Image 1 (cartoon, rainbow, N blue to C red):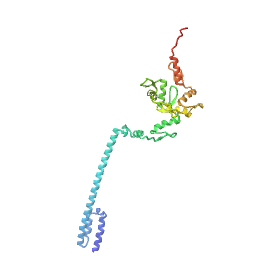
Image 2 (tube, rainbow, N blue to C red):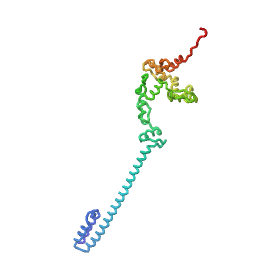
Image 3 (cartoon, one colour):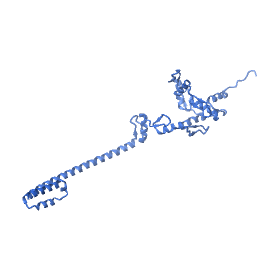
Image 4 (cartoon, rainbow, N blue to C red):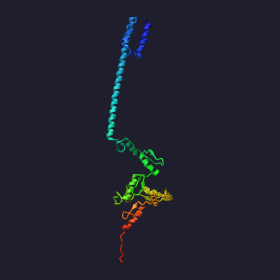
Length: 297
C-alpha cells in the first residue's frame, strides 16, 4: 500500500510540475486523495499537495504580473517613441532639411541629397562618350547634347541653333545690341558676364595663364589653350562643308558662314549685314567719317 501511494504521489507530483496543475481544479486533486484507504498518508499527501498547488499558483501569478508589467512598460515606450517621431517629422516639415556643411535649407530631402554632392565632390552620373562625370542627371543630359549635336534652341531672327537656352539668350543680344554688363572702370559694356569678367582683368593686369613653351600669358584659360595649338599644330575644328580645319572654333564658325550665307551682324544705319564683327566695325567707319570740302574747288 505504501509503495502504491508513493508511486501515486510521484506521478501526481510530476503532473503538477509539468504545469498541468494550473488547468486542473484543486477540488479534483483533493477528491482523488480522499479515495486513498489509509487516512494518515492521505492526509500528509493532501497537505503537501495543497502546499504545492499554492506555490505553483503563486509563481504563475507572479510571472503573469511581471509579463503584464513588461507589456505595460513596452507599450509606454512605443507610445513615447511614436510621439517623438511624430514631433520630429513635424519639426522637419516646418524647418526644412538643413545642410550640416553650409546651413542651407531645402524643402525636400532629395534636394538636400543633391546639394551635399557639392561638398563631397560625388559625381555618380558618368558620360558614356567621354570621361566626364556630373553630380546631377540633368547636367549629364545637357552635356550629352555636345556629343549628339542636337541643337533644339533656334534663333527666330537668323535661324541659328544652340545647345542651351543661355546660348540663344546671349546670341539674341547681337540682334538687339543689348549689352547689360558694364565695366565699372571704363564704362565699356558687354553682352554677357563672362566677357565682362575677362575684360576687367585688363585693368588689373592679371594674366595667370602662362604658356610653358614661350612664356606668353593670357587672361583666359581658353586663350592659352588656343595659343598652345600654334606650337602643336593641332587643328581640331573641321568644316563640315569642305576639307578645311581650324585651331579655334570661332574661326570655324566665321568660315562656315561662307557656305551658309549667314550674316548675323547688321548695320543699324543702313541695314547692311556682315558675317564677322570686325567687318561690321570697319563698315561703321563709313558712317562716322566727316566729309572734308576742298578749298580749291
